Image 1: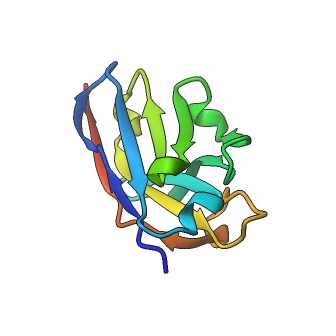
Image 2: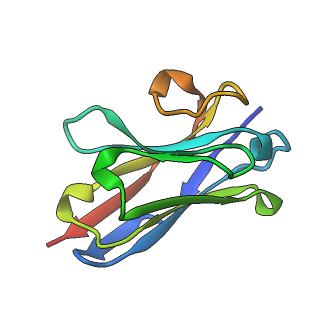
Length: 125
């Protein structure tokens, strides 16, 4: 059973950067595709980025291309989301989610089999 936990959120000034981490203690996590999603206040949960189990394939929402980078270190059971040039509109709760299938990138919430509790990122202007 997966127990994902996000970390690395916080309050950041616009233009700054931060790195979110998503970890799990189980052995299956390193073989599963993982995605990052975010939910801004009053909005639905939106896809941000996803990465395949071996890290070879990545996919990004158009709105974050060039500023967000997803990566993973399977030896540490961790998936990262590096965010550069933060904007106030990036303020959201960021969630990581492990795919319900080794063959599907979790680019839709319906493909996620397990979620983390979320990490708040607040960008001040």
